Length: 157
Image 1: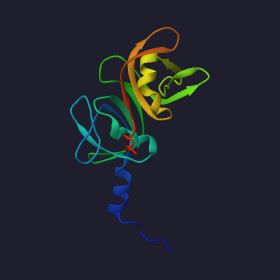
Image 2 (image 1 turned 180 degrees about the vertical axis):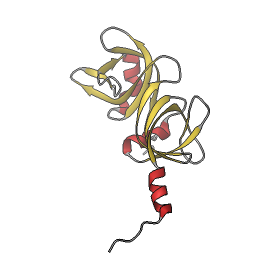
Image 3 (image 1 turned 90 degrees about the horizontal axis):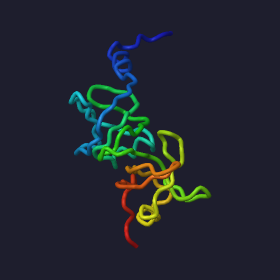
Image 4 (image 1 turned 90 degrees about the vertical axis):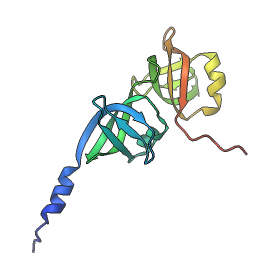
């Protein structure tokens, strides 16, 4: 025997539509927020480990994909569009491997080595995701001007 599905439940399920929204991430009292260029603000509710990294951003322009309901965006994934300083921006894990020390950029899927001064600053963060901004110098090499590690600071022993 089939039971009728209440209309309210159907409307609630259908009201959560998939979305891809571009804006600037800002921290907020209730968690990270995404502010669109037109001024509309979304409360971000990260649903995946990747989306949880949004809480470490402040001023970066991103595209967030997920589902929206009301003024809430349940974030599944995101991509970096622009950093906070107007320089070329890269996002991905820091790697120390046969190609050198650098970032595996999630946007271009390319590996970029970073300058020696930045290596000295970032060597303790190998394996962690970062946002780097800087100048491309040569073949897939970046002179880092600004960085943000997308991880909570580790407690001192």
